[in-house]
Length: 121
Image 1 (spheres, one colour):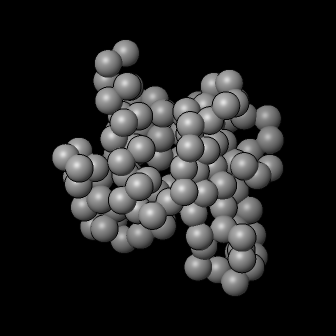
Image 2: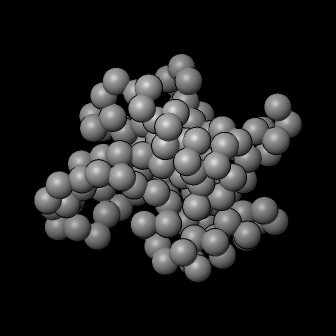
């Protein structure tokens, strides 16, 4: 339990450092509502995710994600584990959509750097 609480705090710091707009979610089963700008011209309003933080690796998050009924309705449900490489969601994006993860929003190096800073800021 303490590990998940610590992860939630670290993700809140990460969102702030990344410049993402976030708030605590009032929807059952989710921890945050997060919005961010998109670089595609087809996504002028950006994207919004409903984030559930759970201490699981990416492959387990991807399997768990299949339980969501409407993954392509915004705000899109998202599962965030321990760090940028352990995130998963699906959404409409650009001309199509599909799988999303924090690392797809920056280079992996930048995402990892923000994650490390979030542990101390």
